Image 1 (cartoon, rainbow, N blue to C red):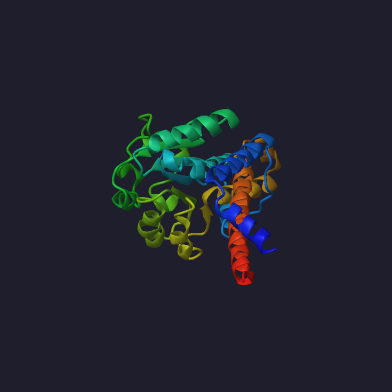
Image 2: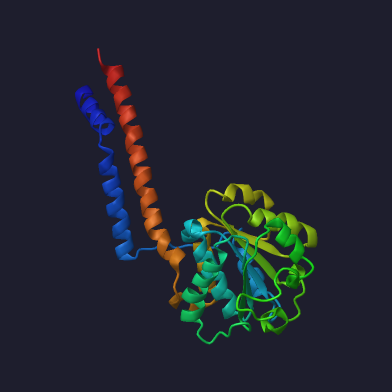
Length: 291
């Protein structure tokens, strides 16, 4: 018995890590090819964002600030897609902007991937408008509280904001029905909370990467009405959208599709952690029983 425990423990201790990577790769590829997905449901942190958009007055504009770069796009772009789909499905104009220098490209990707493909009937300037990137971070937010035109006299196409129907009746940040910052760092959601939400009490929500989530949960629910965390948060929003708008189930749901391989990878990692601990226990048992 001791010899058997000792052999198993030795095998586990000397297991080449390349086998672990190989198993992980096979499982993730298999999950991707099979299209397996895990059922999801919006938690109490994500659901308020969905409910807020559902209950906005007709035609109320939504400000979506894409405060991230390509390195964080896999976690945050699905949130931008789902929010765009929800706003256009419910008839709320979207105003895009960004605190990041790469923001213009991030906005263009959403326009091409979601609006052009799924909402070809949507009209620029009427259903959505892009203000693009402006330097300044928190100072930019400060200046937009009273007047959008203070820093954005035109949209990215050069059209004066007074000629943009999507922003009719909007003078400053307080006139938006909802502001959402999808944030990968600084400047991002924290600056929106400090310089917009806390000052003019505008409805504010956010999305963030997995590593950034712990610093934002303390702001919920008093300073932000909801928070999406990484791919899981985006998948929860897609689940809420699919239940509320069944026509959305035919649309692209990248977060829901991504959760299958991610969950499979997590299960493999947990299995190897359990195996490693089992090897440690067997080693100790063998030592105790040895003469």
